[in-house]
Length: 411
Image (cartoon, rainbow, N blue to C red; front, side, top):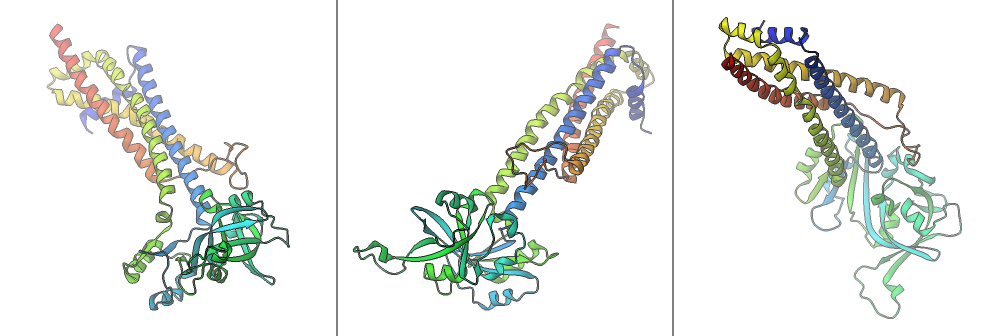
């Protein structure tokens, strides 16, 4: 066994002549333990919140979205896209045509995004989980139906159970110059009944979903689409499929996965997580550097032992390593205990959810604080504590040697 490590281990558990040394060492270890536990718990809570938020978007965000690199629309009836439509790995191939339009219900009006989708869009079984009122129906015996976002529905006061009042949608006619006599002649006007109200997030809730044929007539677009949305069969790797589509579709198209479709959301979630990590790390550093005082007092307590080691031929490097290992063992013991506490907290919160969300939170979505465990977070906390523990212990060991030299000079 390494001599310096063996001596450091004996010092760690040996009784000190001054109880204050044990107290300061214990406080240092407890501080690191609490900081490590808090860090892993907070990171796990952010993982849980990230999962909940992203699952909300996953209900209506496709796994793959193909859009034109230039312009607003493109022709989906190409050889490759027709083959992609029949690909066995594709669960749903949805053609999308969308554009802003003027919406009017009774005496109220607003501008919203009209999104026309083909029937494959309804293969998403999680759409019903977004419904706040009514049902997610785009076509029935009476004709076309629309599903409106909750923000638009609230502003326009749309009544989904009123069979007589329909939503009016106005879209400018293409390739027709304004005649200046009757402005209404410059618009395509279509009526549609609202069958349901969905609620996901503000960016999506300001829109309306309609059948693709209805959108084509409204927008005057016979064959082109704004996007192709693809959901894959279970077990298919999204990244590999995306690379294949990018290669075969060519540079005229942008192929994005869910993270790329919601860049701002992912950026906000990651920024908040790293900001909290940095703040807690600074607190953890303060606890770690308490080890300097503990080791300095330990040197004073063990000055006779060090003098004996020096007389036996132990050099300054050996003495440095003793106190370096001593400081590392104190702080890393606290880190390991903190990680274990974080793991226990995760188990109880994940299993029993004893910390509840506030009353203002929608309990149908989540009732208690979500939490998610990632082994990378444990490695991150362990490495973070290890780096700063080494720096603090190395600084302490250098100060310890200087202190020994001062004591020897006085002797």
